[in-house]
Length: 93
Image (cartoon, rainbow, N blue to C red; front, side, top):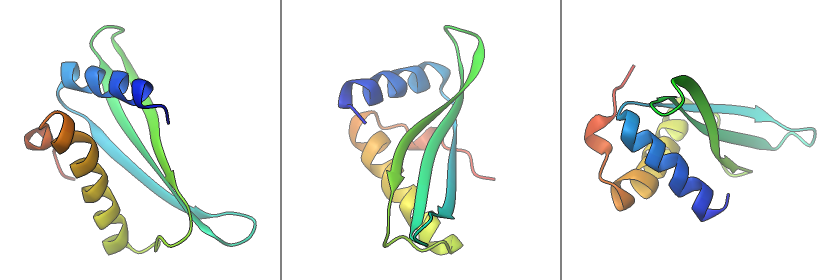
């Protein structure tokens, strides 16, 4: 994903403050695990819910919960902690 697009998505998330992280895994036709990571948030500007795909990870990612948790935490650390320090606004379910 282009860095500019990702920065715009993160700017919207900053305005809304709260967001969720969606992680889903499925094998492709060659039985290689693919992990999709997306943010879901309500846009303050447009007053509508948004879901934005931010990364697709290919092979080497386990479909087990612990591995997905590590991927999620690493991604959040990379995108949010480095750029905007938003980790304090994460809510767990």
